[in-house]
Image (cartoon, rainbow, N blue to C red):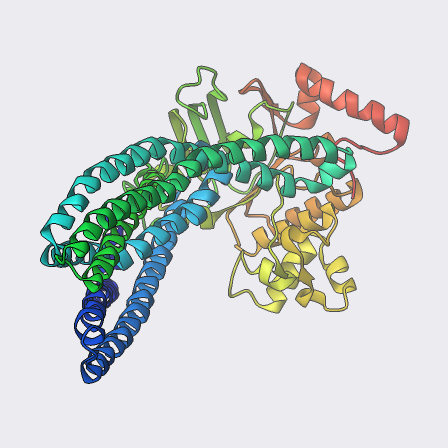
Length: 586
């Protein structure tokens, strides 16, 4: 409840006025049958027209008051629930923004999407139903029971016999449904994961003609969700027939007993009509309360999933940072006996005993086979992950002693997956610096060799990009991402295989621009192509999570076997095709 307290407090008037108006509506529910019984037994039976008109007017006024109460009660309940859901969704989203990559990996993207959308909606629906019915139904139930006893204690006793049996049946249904709802939400996670993966990789799927396979895979996941949904919802469907059975059996018993009393003059027809109405109200109120509990069961499962997000221990924080005001000034980097694994339960280290020193302003290349730990190594510099052992230092200070903001402002990373957002090219570039001028954007694009193709568009920097930059080529996306990183004016620039889709001539032109325009910036480039790092001040060769060797190109070519293998495999391709092709070209 702690996460809802502020929202409930802010919109307390909704959660007070909603039930208040619903209670007014409920009071009218058991006044109307009483007035109707009077009209039948006292007005119609005696031919008293003024009495009928008077009570008819009372019924009309009561009905209008009920209408106003119902409309206003529903309005405030809906408004309060919607605001509560919006606040919870915003808090959950803000919490996710603090997550490290490890936290996101632990939940999965699809699960987080489900939790922040569907699960919050389940809570919203429950709160809305709760505040519409939690006061209205009890008032209706108690009022109808009291009125039925005032009309006929003997008939009311029949209701008292039926209610426990109906309550037991409802409790059994709810108890059985609860775990099924949890399993249904987990299946929804799986479906969202698959949808997210399929849509994200649609081009790959089409290029490999795997549409039919993906359809079959989706159908299996969808069928699983359908089965889990049916399993949970079929119990909810039982509520209606069980309640109807209780109403019909009780009505039959009441009519049989009341019929005998009417025959001997012990009861009037209007009283019986009113009593049956109260009976229906009692069982309807019970059914509505059962629905509240059933929705609450589903909402409780969703609440647990939201709570898991809010209570998740964030792996990376700067709460204990010793020098939060410290900024990256030079860009010197040092690794001291660093070891790391992605999950604590894994025995295998992704990085093992890494020691490395990079001088400020150096151009450093990092090469190695797939899975050798290159991306993991550079991700530790900006604290996308933390090592299990050892230290990573920037400018002689442990990265954990920086605030995350200042550390990541000083170290710009262009990741393997080039992400652009829907909007204009200028809007995407200003992610690097929201105050960047047109001249600064042109400067960054010139270094990244993006200025030529941007200027070729009729709208230039105001050209609209589709989601993910789908209307650009792979090389164009990479160059815009590099330009965006340059606008941060970082002291450390990390390119994680970020020129793989660029032709070798453009790649070389970008590196020359780095040398010319960014002499004081420490530049780390992960590359598949040796040609991209041949002129580096230092080349680090990764193998199996360790540093196999480090040095300049000529030195490594003489002594480092893994480096030789990569180099000669690529030069043989060059001899055959007159170009490096590893990593692809635009």
